[in-house]
Length: 62
Image: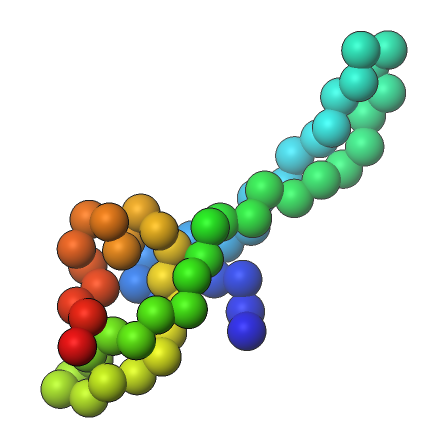
């Protein structure tokens, strides 16, 4: 399962963990992806969609 939304194409972003002493480590900001059953072209398929797409109604559930 790829870390990408099937609807909007959101992917992980790269940033830094910064401590109080300003020690910097790389980190990833992953999108909140959920596996949902959705109607695509008249067929029910399992897709990975971010929660913002599910909440806004872009995912049509069967």
